[in-house]
Image (cartoon, rainbow, N blue to C red):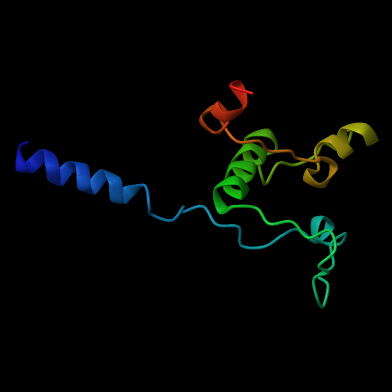
Length: 105
């Protein structure tokens, strides 16, 4: 393999690890008003999400409901509800490569 190809391959693989330049600087007051941080997290009902799953959910929600979207003043109450992220329950499942064990059962 040509050394330049190897260098290009290394550079491209490192770009994937670069942090996203788009950062959320604040949450609008009307969106943050409904959520209050607890002093301690309860153990009952606690769930752990792998980082890749949490990121996948965030990317899907960013596609479905982009941040910074404004709601029209003429929007119906149903439209207002559907344009809020907290209106949705999200479920995630492993991809096909993780399901290979289920096919043989």
